Image (cartoon, rainbow, N blue to C red):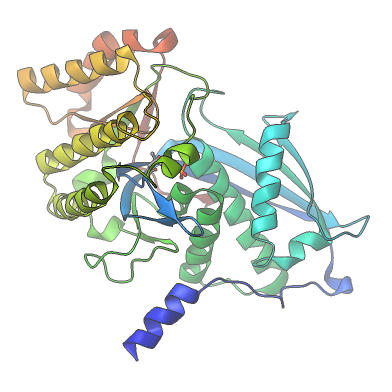
Length: 372
Ligand code: PMV
């Protein structure tokens, strides 16, 4: 019986040819969602199959770094089998992003077949400065997935239960960008099957806020914009390089060990243990890039200086201030709300000068997406 359940879960695709609109049901309307970015503490790095992770990852849902997306739909003027889409990014046409969204919609057409009955217009904008080097795919793809689920619910009334809605949105977001599936949930989310968390899955993320000590519900993340602009090696290229990586298997084992430590630290409110995992994971991610079959470096000289200053500040003051890194040079400075008055002057005087135009973003644990 249990085997059948597991099998069913793995086969779940959400494909549903019945979600086609009767001619009389076709109408015009729009849906708008705001969805945040997230910062993985245990990283997803390496994938297989249809965007399935090689190891489970656990992330902090951010608050002030988000994408706001409006999806306008109208009965299609000229019938066709492909998606009919126009897109404005921050008020301007953006061919590259339009192509990516179109690809995503084509991929999810078997899940939402009604999309091809409509002329779609996407208007999207980010809260963070244009090309600040902040990965926007998690917030952008989760916002789009939420819009599609809301549209399904408006037309068919099939997703009125929050839990069912969120799970589907997370599944769909994953197909756009793996890390996007974690942005659906407030505060903390886990993606990937692990014996540590019942109900966890490779197909969608699950909420973790209830398994997390309150000190981590108000965690701060000051994001140092050390270098803006597009990175030389994309995350998808980075994931592919894990396929023939000499340390791949060791990495996946280490990620599981770090996840175990992180879950315990988050549950008990152990900031030191949390920080140790956060920094180990950040440096391991970058060491995997540097030891890949085609090696590359995404850290900048100022990234290293900032790390040294965080370490020195922690040593001098004893304050629990830690760092993490995404796949880029920008340092995320993590600390609890209780020490904000001690940490901010340090960030302003010692870390901000290492940033491009002295810019850093003030972010923190957030409540998750919001329909507008
Ligand atoms: O979701 P992707 O394909 O952009 O990959 C994200 C990879 C990292 O941001 C480096 C780690 C993570 O788990 O978010």
